[in-house]
Length: 80
Image (cartoon, rainbow, N blue to C red; front, side, top):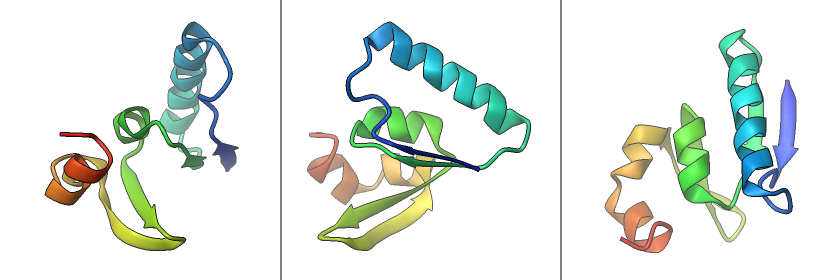
């Protein structure tokens, strides 16, 4: 298992893209990855399953595709 906390904060965008490509390769081998990420778009694109935390509690838990289309997530986190 790899655990990452806000890996997209700090590095240049190209480095972040390369890091996620490398992580995707590891994930495809069956490695579990626990990712804490405030970049919601990046997190939902990468993760197969996601959790939305509000005030320290799990507000929503579902497949990333489901969360991407959830009205609450779209309004609150995606600005749509």
